[in-house]
Length: 250
Image 1 (cartoon, rainbow, N blue to C red):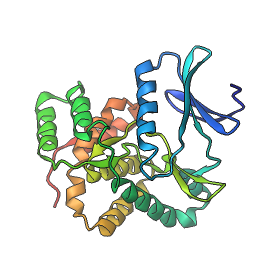
Image 2: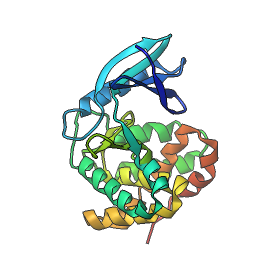
Image 3: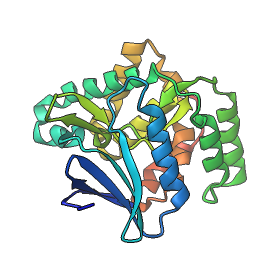
Image 4: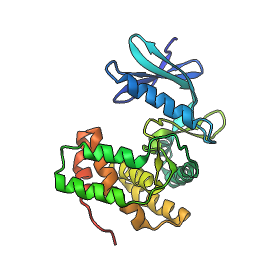
């Protein structure tokens, strides 16, 4: 397999184009189990009615695990927002509508969102036991839903295809089934960190379209913020620690 052009680079992988495929090559010490899990999760979601790049193969390239999938030529919504600032709200509404469509699906074989959040929070050593107990108690009392949640739904993870103009959702390795408001809270947190001018508008638009009480989404913020600490991104920790305080929103 010839890796023709670098498309993107993340903390744990580099993505290349190879003909009609995009090949995600993981760093040498990235766990094999995590690679296979990502491929399996994506494969499980392929046939439920969303536009996503489909898995072609899993292989080893120069000693590194790799996942090959459909190559979607185009730009991410994040790129389009930067290039067309006057259309930010239009792209934001597209994101909200796409996330609502995703939440209308389910995939029961996936891991439960609550279980994933519980595991991450319980494993943290940067918050004290009392705070951890408050967060886990809040998580335990939240309603149990079975909606498809992306877990990292951001403008970076939606590509608008040059071929058909349709949006394609990428990077499904954090997908679970659970509460849609938790997934929105996770998107809101990312926007607060990297596109703060859009965060409140995004949440308000979702709540209006779905007739969801804003307070219901906000109650998830401390929980998803604590779970994000698991990623150990130093530049995020200041803001995230502020969100972790367990408060009741009015």
